[in-house]
Image 1 (cartoon, helix red, strand yellow):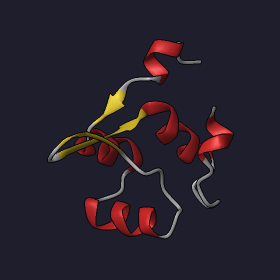
Image 2 (cartoon, rainbow, N blue to C red):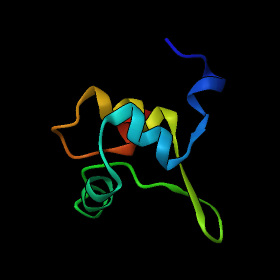
Image 3 (cartoon, helix red, strand yellow):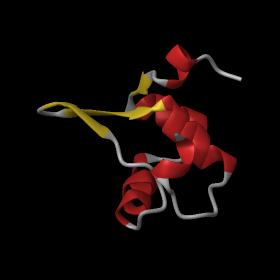
Amino acid sequence: MKSEIEARRILRRQEVEALTGLSRATIYPLMTEGRFPKPLRLGRRSVGWRLADIDGWLAAPERAYDPAAVE
């Protein structure tokens, strides 16, 4: 099990792609459909995803993503 600090880690898009095996062209439509975690805004032109959110999605990618179930 990941430590609490590790679970709070923010992943950039390339890390998310590597962990999930999905491309940017797949991730963004899944987010629009509510089937993939939405990123956090980190700056004007940057976003990142919580590792815990990605881990939660990886546990059950076929279900619609529910952020309340991760916490």
